[in-house]
Length: 217
Ligand SMILES: N[C@@H](CCC(=O)N[C@@H](CS)C(=O)NCC(=O)O)C(=O)O
Image (tube, rainbow, N blue to C red; front, side):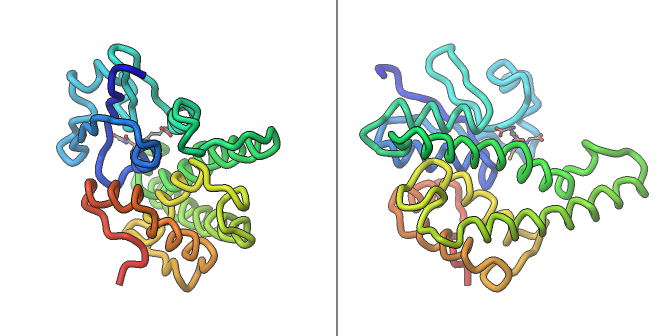
């Protein structure tokens, strides 16, 4: 790939997953920070890049790719020497299963708590959406924890982009929105996060985004 990739990301957002994947790939890339606090993702300049008004977006010249599962697969398969995408067909399907579940179910459950205004209008309905979202998140966090039990990585012995994606939701679990005690409630997921934290690529992405590596304090 001749032109460097540009990754549009926001600190601590789900764009952390492709940020880690790019660091793992060893390929040169330009990280472009989008300031979500000031609503930069909804401003015309960014909407020209991604009309959805969301991060991540990955650009090569004028070609722009959005949606984490697509971006993660694209990065992993563009740089095969980094071994972020398995060869075995069943293993590949398992990675796609994780990416699909995280994007369609885990992330969406979190949005019911963090972005309840997407799903309801009245104060009473918003409170219900948040409460139900919280319950669903706890159930899903338990389900992820249970699936990670065998480890060391999401699909077993091989590290893949699914592991980078999972780390986003571990950090959101410890955050103020969900406020889970990750180490106590989700020990296998926390062991996975700790393994992630030993990887230089993860450390570089966390440092650039100003995030605290697991375990935090
Ligand atoms: N389905 C998208 C979701 C992207 C998404 O919702 N990104 C959030 C950050 S984690 C965002 O940009 N939110 C901005 C907003 O809602 O205004 C993906 O997986 O890439």
